[in-house]
Length: 185
Image (cartoon, rainbow, N blue to C red; front, side):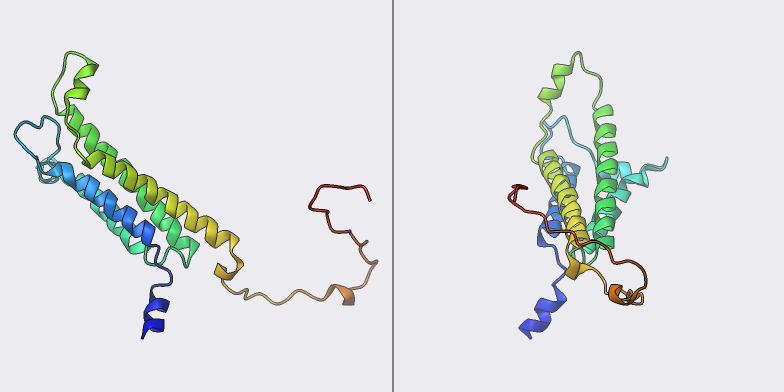
């Protein structure tokens, strides 16, 4: 039973799953106003239910959901890790648009220093760290899949002919390189 469970979860990238969930938490925290004194927050529900087409904010959830799903197979296939990377970038773009729209609706201020008066809470740092980890883990899994021969699918092409059976002059032997860099010999 333990072997079956281990083989089912072999492709799971736990850090990618954690990053996607942290991103989701960071995105959701500012949806709920912590207190009436908070000047900066975005009501995702208000954005999502705008009669003028505010449902675009819900695309962020779709991108995060794709990243969560991809985390279960990202270590097995570079294609899935690429999907996770695309979902992470989609989440980044959409969440930046929501935050920018929120800043825009905060009202005009006299100077740029007014941004320091906005209580950001833990939402934006969670969102930033989660997105950074999500992008990093997707890139790592792509690189791992591309460089690890065990992760590559078996070749289906016919084997190459043996060099010794081909006609023509033999190729000159090339001595192996010295890893120490000492070429004198």
